[in-house]
Amino acid sequence: MNRLRIWVQALFFLMTNGYWNFPVSRTIYKGPLKVVCSPGLNCYSCPAATTYCLIGALQQLLGGIRMAIETGQFYIGLYVIGTMGVIGGFVGRMVCGWACPFGLFQELLYKIPTPKFGIWPVLRYVKYGLLVFMVILLPLFAVDSFGTGDPWFCKYVCPAGTLEAGLPLIMLQPALRANLGLLFSLKMVILIFFIVWAVMASRPFCRTACPLGAFYALFNRVKLVKLSLDLNRCNHCEACHGVCPMGVRFNESPDDRECISCLACRSECKQQAINIEIGGLTLGPPSRSKTRPTRA
Ligand code: SF4
Ligand code: SF4
Image (cartoon, protein in one colour):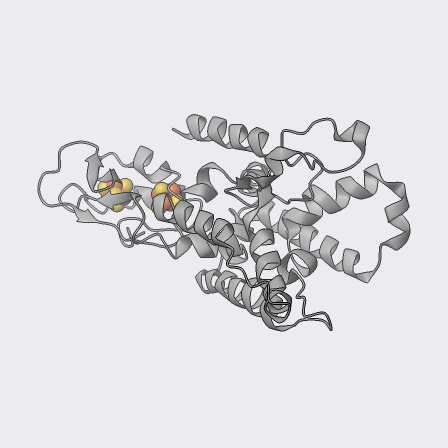
């Protein structure tokens, strides 16, 4: 299953970053595909990106609302919000495990052989704060004299943006280097911090700071595709604990919002106690009795 997942992750990486003419054009792709969203975190300004980023688009949408109201051109960004809701409702954080280029990047870093550490569970709540304050409230209310808000998360935090867009663009366009200032240095510190952390701990950005993961996590209890635990098969051997890249103890918390449906625990479970449910239909061995559905 892990091999299949790597192939799917690679496929999504290539589909969302399919513009390989950028070393010649030295700029970002602006063709017709750029109206399609990337389900995972993938910077719009990455020179290879053929899609746009939902978190970036949401901030642009919210940052423009005040000016739109003042100029009488009020709109509701159904496309952005609707896309996020539909993806969340179908698969939730499965996107993080199967379709996010920055998640794949962290998984590859974690394969570097070094001492490994856990992540303090309470840090998982930081990403909800970033979603509320930097993605929603600040773009909406901290507006300039024209009534326009900044994309605060993209501008001041996002390490995926620095890796995929900032660094490649200053290599492709030397003129940009003259304008690099304190902000770029700050973003480099954040990127290096998460790279080093991802070598030593599993998926630290996903677990502590990703606002897109936080948004999808809100749907984990109602999404269509989810995992469930067969309480009558589980013998609480805890074999599923050690393999989870998100620090979930599946048999204790089958509805955990951190679960990215990577299925590592399902492969590890000798009791076949972990099932996949799609719209209420269970895929897996016949249950010995009543199956407890997950909410994650
Ligand atoms: S590995 Fe399977 S049997 Fe063991 S605790 Fe996890 S779900 Fe239960
Ligand atoms: S609980 Fe299982 S499916 Fe969910 S992230 Fe952990 S190992 Fe993957």
